[in-house]
Amino acid sequence: MRRTKEDANETLRTLIDVAKKHFAEHGYANAALESIAAEADVTRGALYHHFRNKHGLFLAVLESVQQEVGERVEQEASRSEDLREQLLLGCHAFLAAAVEPDNKRIMLIDGPSVLGWDTWRMLDGKNSMSHLREQLTLMQEQGMFAEASVDALASFISGGLNESALRMAEMPDTAAAMEQTMKLMAQLVGAWPGT
Amino acid sequence: MRRTKEDANETLRTLIDVAKKHFAEHGYANAALESIAAEADVTRGALYHHFRNKHGLFLAVLESVQQEVGERVEQEASRSEDLREQLLLGCHAFLAAAVEPDNKRIMLIDGPSVLGWDTWRMLDGKNSMSHLREQLTLMQEQGMFAEASVDALASFISGGLNESALRMAEMPDTAAAMEQTMKLMAQLVGAWPGT
DNA sequence: ATATTTACATACATACTGTATGTATGTTAA
DNA sequence: TTAACATACATACAGTATGTATGTAAATAT
Picture: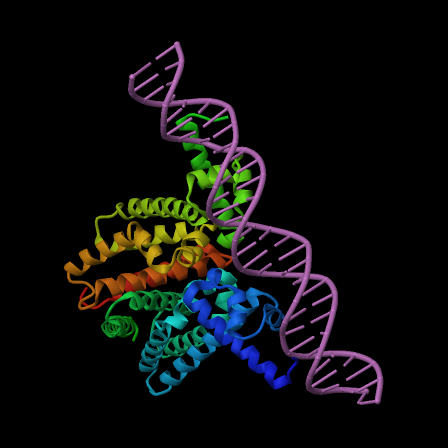
């Protein structure tokens, strides 16, 4: 039985991967730890060895998802030197990542419900949300978004993007939906007074 | 035992009210039907007589909440003749309603997770969301929001408002938070090209 | 080489949902 | 007016999922 430390890390990652799939597919509530463990070729005992409880497992999954999405956003945004373009590229990357079935439900739907909004927000703050706020702050320092509160703006945009992603995911032509949403974002960012 | 039809209606409404409280306080997952039934002075048998299952009870609760919020939004919006003002008044009413602890979690957090986003969206579409879309359509017919897709815009604003409400609810000074958010909304709506 | 910790498995307790069935009361129609 | 039926519950039970306590073999530390 008992394996080496590396093997343990592998089962841990396997558990996260399998759990991610199950959470995305069935939702948090309907994902059974028994099934997850079985598909990872361990028993629930192993799962409870690596994670405190179901919440802990979900937290690990969400962290992994958010980190990956955050990296994609940052990477795409960095392809431009223009602040406004950076923001738009970042939003595009976020939307593209968020509509993926594996990410959608975990990030946007079950996340706040399972962990509570404040915890979810803290996690989000360590990833995509923090980039957004930084970017908006920079832009405001350049005179954009005149008197607006950056925090309020960041929340609004973040929520708007989330809901847009969910809408996009339900539409038959995702590409067209993306274009609609990005055109809207461009108008929004471009039209702001004090630009 | 057995009561009249009116008594039955009363227990039904009591169940919804008590359930609303429990769902808001503990969240859907941690609200026990046993406790809800007990506080309504019936057994779970009565609950299962009136509702198909826990989802059914939650659905009834959410419908009640959304309808009430929708009415408040519509009423406030109707206090002006100006399309833009109507929109802002409606948003203000929505935010005011959404930050209330009893409504927040049910509407904005657990709703999509418990019922699935599509079902939640359908429900939302019968209430606040439909008003928003109608309003935006009217405004676009007057030349506002030039080329933007009304659907995409409605989703974005709706999501933005939801997230803003959640942020506001966490802030110590809700009134100040409301002002920030409304100033932002006003700028957003006022600054749009094609106005 | 032995002790101890680690990485699991197994067995069990608990809690909650859902269902099946029972029962008393209201309702309706002959 | 009463018999037949429907309604509004209560009670008891089964199923399922989480979580916990304990056991065990292998790896690691001493």
